[in-house]
Image 1 (cartoon, one colour):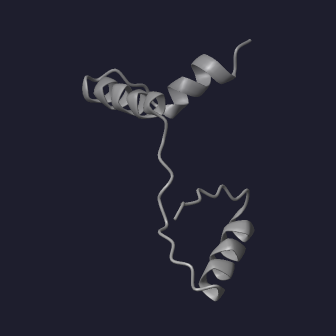
Image 2 (cartoon, one colour):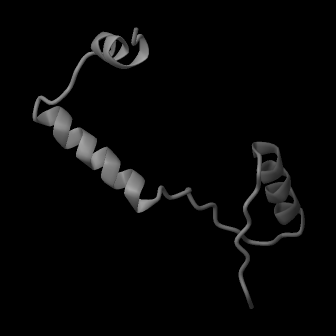
Length: 69
């Protein structure tokens, strides 16, 4: 038998699909969404920078990047 991978566009669609599958007594396994490798690498790089003391406060960030004059 083949399997299906379903991509609902909203929480409502996901809820409806699950309800239909349950009503039809179709077994399914919820799978958490995985982040792309480049996103995980970015998180890891940021954590290492923070641990090395390479960070600034939010106030410093706002002054540097948001309120340029």
